[in-house]
Length: 70
Image 1: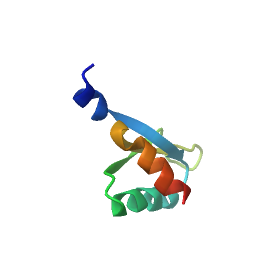
Image 2: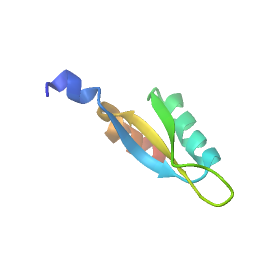
Image 3: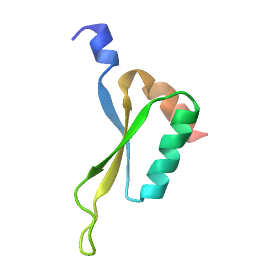
């Protein structure tokens, strides 16, 4: 895999079970210029729980961890 393609790969930064917390993290990253995405995994219903994956481009991993740990 070439360097440009590797830097554009999408990775899971974190997994949430609360949509509000996932959305707050996504907005915090976007406020700092890091493009991020939320993707639901599993299903949400009365009897089961799904999760929400916060995804970013791999090139932003180091900065994203720093921003979310502040």
